[in-house]
Length: 91
Image 1 (cartoon, rainbow, N blue to C red):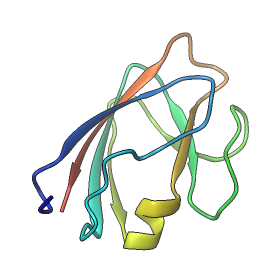
Image 2: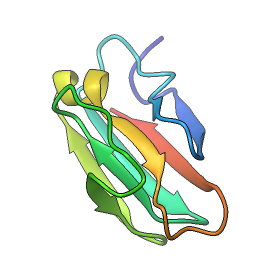
Image 3: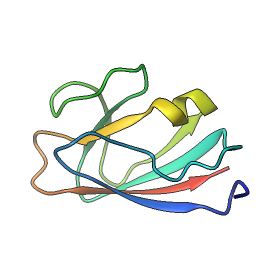
Image 4: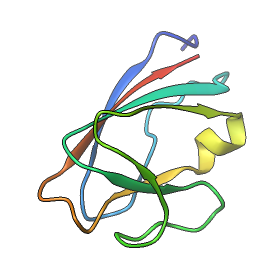
């Protein structure tokens, strides 16, 4: 699968999730957040609903580097009333 061919939608709820459709040659992801704030980490540790960095609702974020794409994990923030959806484009 060539880079740029994948647009992924990822639901983020109360369980930790990772990127599911990263092309093997991808080194960049553009991530948009809908519905709820999420927490993330890419240091090998899973975030919790109260610990981790934020991606805010309506935000658009760059994730750069193959190792970050392989290791990033997400969970819905504890203050969120519903699930989040991440819209992801790879390059």
